[in-house]
Image (cartoon, rainbow, N blue to C red; front, side, top):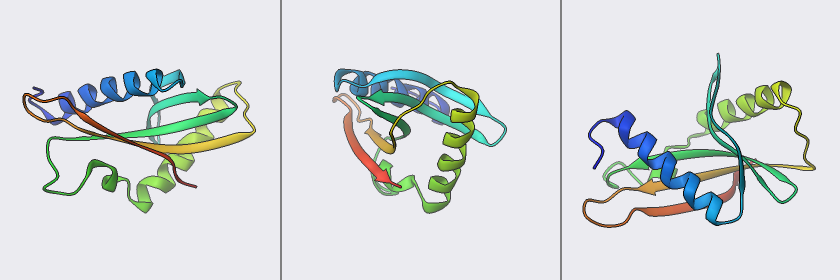
Length: 120
């Protein structure tokens, strides 16, 4: 079990990346950073370019992990997506913002919740 918040986040992102890959998405980038922040995962799903935020928690005492993607976080992710697009030669007819919640439980498999097109 991960001991620090940052280790928990890395663990959750690995689980999310494996989940998305098994669901047929092709990962293009992970942990892409610029001065405004970080994109957890950028992927292709058919013709769609997907910007995916991953939230990992050990429990639901503070709500389900996907609830942590607030309107302010959504605005920042839109800005980051524009920065990523400006820095890369990728084009897509559809841009999509997904959220993957990973609930890590002691001695049991993680529970993954994938919200496709979670926000615009």
